[in-house]
Figure: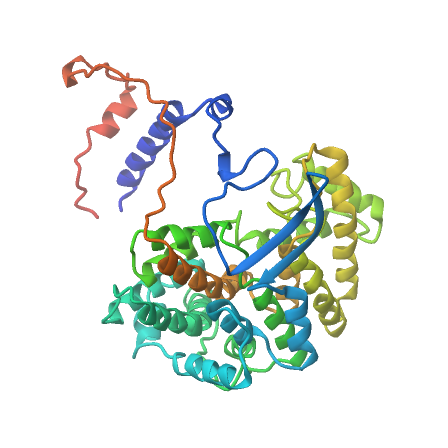
Length: 476
């Protein structure tokens, strides 16, 4: 594109973006007047009931004497407490990803024979089409690995002869394949970016079907394929804890909305990926790490509670970091007293910090986990308690595992595709209506005007020159 063309487009978008604001801004008072629950949540944070699910249960409050009272957060996969699930496979010294994936997809914990059969099926599904890595992933690499994965998922549809077949056995086949290849799509996408955009060495390691998902992730990512047992177990725990979180989170709701339209599996998962990549959803752990880096640059003594507390106040006052007024990793749409995923994860984090000689960093995170709720309570009017969420520690873990920041959200996707797949099948089995929420229209009716009768906005001389350019530029 020529410089003149680019200037023309920029002038147009700058001008008309302001017009968009003028004609699209809605008075916030009207939301209350019409009883609209923005974000599908009321003022107390309670979500609008839009469906039923038998996949997971999130508990953050209980009813006492007719009133909802916050309680310690609890998370159940198919009725099993996440604490018990993680404790079970950790005590037995095995990896939990496949076991919990089976549980979410099929409703019950597998027997030894069922788990072996499931693992074998996933291993056989762990293949990409011939030359797919070269012709798709390596072409047009992007620093945004979520975009790279979305492109890859949509391209995989071209290799599937039954792409639009919505029979349950076919959807399950497609889901298992995507669950199996997601680690490859993410890691290979990063290696392509790292080589072609960052001029680093390129290496593509094939996954080992005898290893766990966490082990394969580390094996494919690292030049020497090496990792410690603790590293793999901590990453496995992270994948299990991120695997599912009810039907109301943004990406899972997206999964169910697009599924309800009758769309194919690849399009549904691409939509879910697009939802997850947003910084308000799956990208939050990156913000935590960046915030902590900013804290270290701007606080003289990170062991001094008063200095750290003062920095947290500056965050809330929009005077530090990205000036958003947020302490990232603190608070959750559902949990108030505690996020059970963060509680489970913290034990693994401390062990890994000891192995990596980063216990001082762990102490800083623990200090902020304790101080931030106090600072938020003093500074802000909140309707419920605030506690650390799972994102607060996950970014710290990934940094200790030397996982590049570009892969933080893709790792979330590698875990969450299991939940998405379970919800897609539940939607297909139980509901035959398209999800179509209502929006109250506040349009003002206007009489039609002919083109000649419409007022023309005044253009200065520069704008006249710009908008008289030919539509097509031969230099392109």
